[in-house]
Length: 220
Image 1 (cartoon, rainbow, N blue to C red):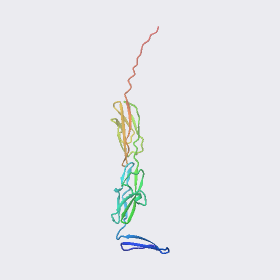
Image 2: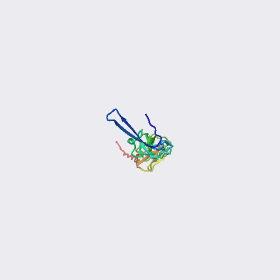
Image 3: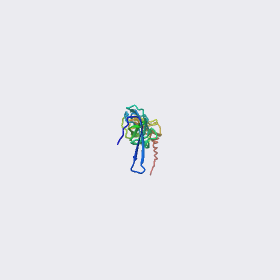
Image 4: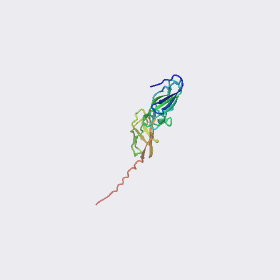
């Protein structure tokens, strides 16, 4: 059965088992507070997205309480939210898309909401080059990653002249002098930046002109 209390205060319930001798008694109490509204929270705005390997601060979420109770907010790894699954802090670094749970507490009343933090994969900056080449030749640089042509490609051709030199390529690169050169690439897509990829190109001196020597021979 249930008992409803309409007036704030502390109430005690005593149960006596008279079938025992002497009788056994147990008492429990509960405090009923007045005028406490439960929180009613929602998370507004789009689901947050992070790049792989980066962090997100859950305290930056736009959490609204329809009842304006100014609740205490805690973040949790599973549901139902409780002290056992409360996160140690508000900064998280998920490896894959992860759902976090938000507990709003006002006195003895609480409400729970959830948010999924998505994870964007980093674009690839992989590319290949032809090497070695002669100083009179050109190295072909070919992007082999999966980023679309609309991504941002930042090339460094180490002083070489590249055609076309921008975008995904392929590029034809020449250098004015022999030596060892390093080409690097970083790709940015959907706000995420790849690691830096580097390849080495060896530019050789031209071969010397062959020297042909002829000796006349006579016979009798």
